[in-house]
Length: 405
Ligand SMILES: Cc1cc2nc3c(=O)[nH]c(=O)nc-3n(C[C@H](O)[C@H](O)[C@H](O)COP(=O)(O)OP(=O)(O)OC[C@H]3O[C@@H](n4cnc5c(N)ncnc54)[C@H](O)[C@@H]3O)c2cc1C
Image (cartoon, rainbow, N blue to C red; front, top):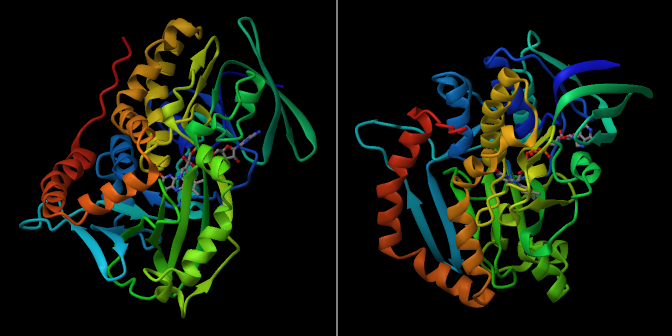
């Protein structure tokens, strides 16, 4: 039996980040994960600027030292949107005088990236239990008990705070009776690793909005060693309404679609396509209560317009650590201590949530038509060029302010 003030369940980007910042604040805690790292996670492997910002808030210059010089990451300064056969839009970031010569996006296989994060977990403050699967949790006003199994042996953890960082199939959510899927705020996605897709030499972040996948996009993300992450995602309500088989549509695009199938003619798939769910932030799930707090996918924080969830997961871990610091200082782990936690999270996601809510009211075909008309427009390129410098500068240099009051 283990006794601790804080127990983080899950060591993906959300849980690992919470642990890293708690250690920075010198707060002892337990973190456990059912898997033994390195482990895979179905994902597009795209790391947005939020990821870079959180890491540079962990340690100044962290990204420059550990990511930009690391051969397990690829970097991209351009977005290439495929619109129709021989019709594309290229949004490029060309830094002036070598200032902020940083990428707009990075890519790394989750098997590598998540392990890269957990290797930074500090054993001075964190007791990290891998291969430890939580099976049951009792969380109420008076008690928080976690029952887990490691190598067939039962472990009981008594804690003042349970941090649910255990992803989309969260056992914390199940224990709270909260894991119900709302299809309007949930998407299904799939990923397939490929090798030797043609025309990958520029490391573009590539997107394609095929007519057969309304309200969704197919991505091709460049990875090290000539590999690529290819996949697509679609809102679950739409999938069930139209009885869509995502795998079939995906395979059909890669094999037959006139816009991109040529690129796959001499390429090799490295696996069967793998599916997983995306709990979207538009759900606005309750994220805290007496003795519990949710982060990342467990809190349903994926950006609904882009599908990015790693950045929001890490941002929520960073914010959670600040609220936990107050709970430790005041020895108060009740709901009132965390009352502004969701405000701090959603203020960074509301723009995307509002856009998503508008999109839902226009027809998918009209939406794709608008996007395909706007993207190649020179105004769009101008907007991207003008703002991307600011976004990159913020990500690499600005402190993330958390207002806990
Ligand atoms: C097809 C697809 C493509 C995507 N593409 C991108 C992308 O390109 N960029 C992006 O930013 N986001 C992307 N996402 C979203 C992203 O993958 C998630 O948002 C992100 O993984 C959330 O991190 P997390 O730490 O909350 O959860 P996870 O990464 O799921 O980690 C949860 C951890 O909890 C552990 N766990 C689960 N249950 C238990 C238990 N009972 N006991 C102990 N441990 C447990 C798991 O082993 C796991 O390590 C994509 C998602 C999908 C499905």
